[in-house]
View 1 (cartoon, rainbow, N blue to C red):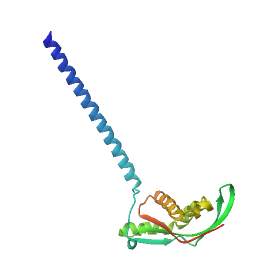
View 2: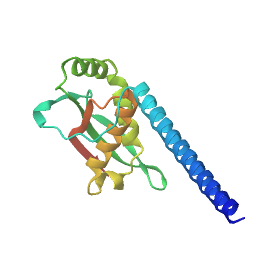
View 3: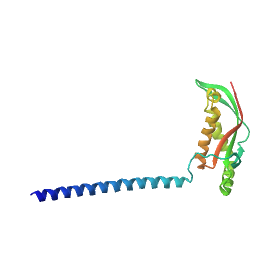
Length: 167
């Protein structure tokens, strides 16, 4: 009787170990499949949005037409204030073919770049654009949108060479 109980315990321990191994392998395989699907999706998009620190000489800049002049929205609804902002978009010039492609794409779609910039400015209030850090926040908003819309991390900066906010 004692020998059969011992044999039963060994069988149960082996079954639990086998079950644990199956669950572990299944979990690992499931996570691996998810990571592969995410990588495939990212490759399908053709770009990765990542923070890039570049030397100023590694960036070419394009002025986005004339300065954008627009009314600003008020916190209460109507309009309050006017903005005159000249937008400049910078792209990575360290990769020969890709740099030429993004330059051509930006120049070809300059009206779209102006529209994105205009929307970001028009959706800002006078108080938002006169607050500390407003230029950086607006630049980041426009940069994020352009990188996503063009699906390229070759666009590395948005800056302003004219920034006038009038009440």
